[in-house]
Length: 95
Image 1 (tube, one colour):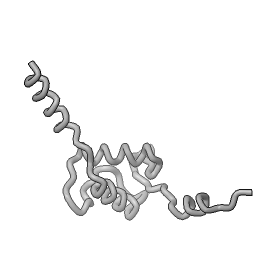
Image 2: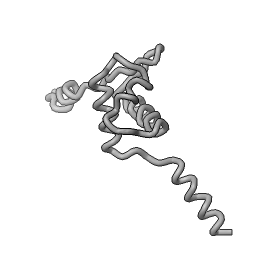
Image 3: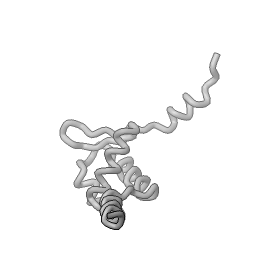
Image 4: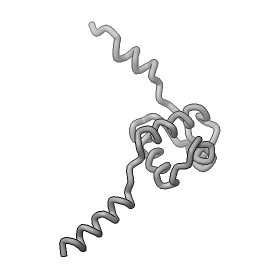
């Protein structure tokens, strides 16, 4: 019985792979470069290396959750992260 459960667990783990940090950064750079120009599929086709569609969607969901991108009503993806603003807020003097 344990072997059966073990095999089942392994197949579930393989099905839900997490993207690597390198892949997340690559997708984020492409979105930043083409911000406001394309929808999901068009951006996916412009990636410098192949990424599985499901992995790509997982990355997009992650970037939306952490407020780095937004998806408009018509599906266009825009990069909204502003690192300069974050630096100014982080290093401002408190009174």
